[in-house]
Image 1 (cartoon, rainbow, N blue to C red):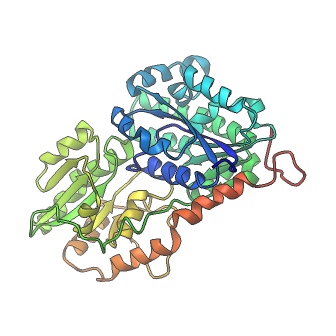
Image 2: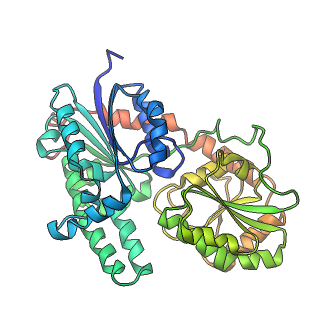
Length: 415
């Protein structure tokens, strides 16, 4: 380890366990970078249960500062942004002790590289911290555009608040991108959107895909069935306190699934994911719908499902839930938004529907065996070919090891 250079890794949430979208990406990124650098990790812990995994993540680090974040208090603190003119996201994650640790770590003098995971954590870098130092920001998604998408589905006062957050956060994202060596997004579509929104940083904006552990998510391993024999299951997996997931399963359970159940009485819609919101829990009262809450292993639920569903109406980038279901060789029924950014495989015919009627027809076809038998196998072959974590995460090392900021020909750093 002693011959490796130092790297400061900042993340808005502890990158473990890898059980939800952002933590899957941040963990695989940290794990890969630990093979190249001496990691100094600064992150928040916003779920008390995650403190159990402190040793798991610090095993990859030379130094780590994990700091508790209370989401309820953070929401109240975020309102300070209305007075300061900031995006509410900034004060939500603002913390004096985190700032002190970051500045002390950077002031050591040997921290030549910084990886920022999620734009909110870039607030801990002072303007001078970018000078002669590689700073790569993994924005993942264009978060400002998510708030823009949320606005039309909400009423006053949330609608104008979300529109304000979209504007303010975009200004913050552009400022960060202008200072950083490189800004990274999870798909070519996300990167191109940001280039349009921030044309001044188009040259230093990059796309690096997610990956999937195809050895772990493999249909060849033996799993016990979690389902009652004879039932035919459609399954949704994801963190069930995330608004986009909540919206998706409510729409599917309330608007689409009743028609499926009418045609296929053995059909079941199983919602698998931790921390189900009250709206999600109530969906279990619908005939044929089951809400599991947290499970130890999602793979059996995928392995024995007729199909996975991803009826997301608001989504950015490549969805881990889609990649994992494809790796498990399952058909995936999805909206166009959920499939946005997925690599095109010539031998994969996506089961995509935009309307309730189209999604219902696809689900009935999957439940009754009317889709090609090799659909799942072709899905798995696609992710095995295009979604290697090592290949994608290696591109971060390339950016961190590119020409030093300020050197002739770099062109990627703006103080």
